[in-house]
Length: 286
Length: 270
Image (tube, rainbow over all chains, first blue to last red; front, side):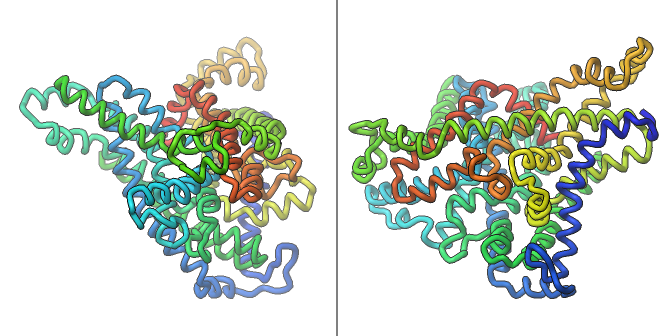
């Protein structure tokens, strides 16, 4: 198709128009509004970097930032360890391994909002019943402190996303030629040696994929946060995405919310760009 | 592996599987209990079992209405995404110029932008032209989700030889006929992947529809959120509502599992 041909542009029009109206124009408007005193409808003056200076001293934002960073670090490690563990488990040949795959992936089909409600019941009702039965005090009053809220969010995320990460690791595990493993077995390599010397290096690309997936998903989490803890108690478990939504729609501080959204964009985009460059470099190296 | 160790692995697997299923056990069993039954024991099986919670939450959730809204929005958005993205990917892939690589880069770069960064001006703009409704929402999904879909289609298109287009052109087919009679059917494996990824994302989406839809067009997640707010301390009703709302998803998952796993793998790995 030629650049100037009518059909070329007709084929592209619907998506180009949608992309412009839904993503790029609002993004540029948002960037502009972050330098104004916009109240959601109109603005009276430009304020320079005032909103950005304000957000640096905004306790809710700073708290949400560090809470999110801690959450991302813990979930990236947990998801990759558990996801790989599940993948290794279900790729063993035993009766029921396919059924287990189905079970592990199932939470991924359910939306974050409903998952949060499910676990709210388990943490508040199930855990306290279990705590009574076992006389374990640490199982009581979950989600009422920042600490238990944090671990609650981690557990929900791990339960939801491990199956997804497992699927990706399985795809890479199945690409390992069986002959290499068998040859190593004949040469007398133990199961642990086969894992560390063959399987592990051969699924290295899967680590990059999974690490960046869990990294950027972790930063963007909103639904689970909303339905599990609602950011409480006292906004202590509020993550970045939720802080932006609340700054805009609860506090009606639209220009500050825009400044936060721009910082949020820079963080998320940087993670993705690092991944792209890293992948390029690895492909060149190989 | 020896037979004994296979058994050990199977038992270990079964235990982990049970742990994974435990939350489902909790919500389903407790949804059949009376408030007293839940208070007496959360872990026990329902005794006596009651179906009343389902009757009540079915009504309170307006289940038929919200299920219909969810279905209309998901199906229409996904069809729109499939049609428009495959067309765009076709135009971009068959045009070897700087312009088309530039446009592809534009689409891909949109994937870097998180929803919260466009949300406020987006809803303000659409509100200004009275498009905060399900039609506006479908258009927004096209804008948000076309990038990944175009990217996936584009990869598959490069494996369909240009000779196919030329042969059809010799027979006198128009550009549109070549696309929808020859090329589009050959893309069907990727169409399944694109459909699956978008169905899961759109069906479960909460934040965007909550900012866009009027109450009459509420989808299941939105209805669940309101419902939950009203019945916070009434777990017997809330749990029946949760169970109802995940039934369609589980049925879809079990029926289309093979394609779902393939679609999710393609979407993540490519």
